[in-house]
View 1 (cartoon, rainbow, N blue to C red):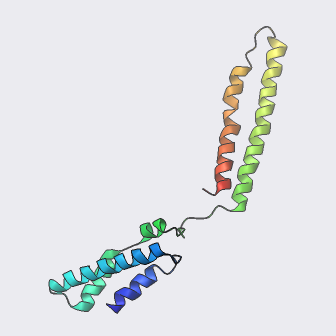
View 2: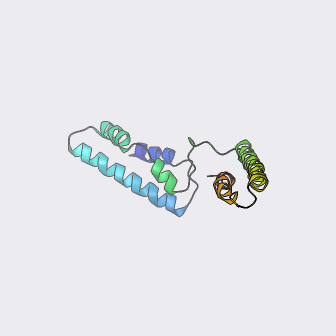
View 3: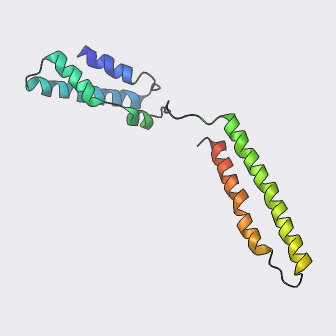
Length: 142
């Protein structure tokens, strides 16, 4: 069963040391040993039972997430991405102000007796608002 202990240690090598890690490792090892005993009772040789238990156990990525280990496959947000979202936010603010200014000019130049520019203003303000939420999400690293 030394092979099982080595396998469990390899699975959890990148998990930071903690009491929770030790408890989970013991549970995994216990489950693997029980599986090996069950397979041996069914007539498998010890080596075959160990290998089959390891293969059937599979991946522990969900356990690693619970223990707080970042996923290596997930790309981290780079500073370039953060700069791009900030640039998008700034662009959306300035462009929205220009378009709203254009509506104000058109409204007061052609129909000063009716104030209608506020209606498209509400629609236009969704653009910088959405860019702000995108930027804040990138800033938090999500």
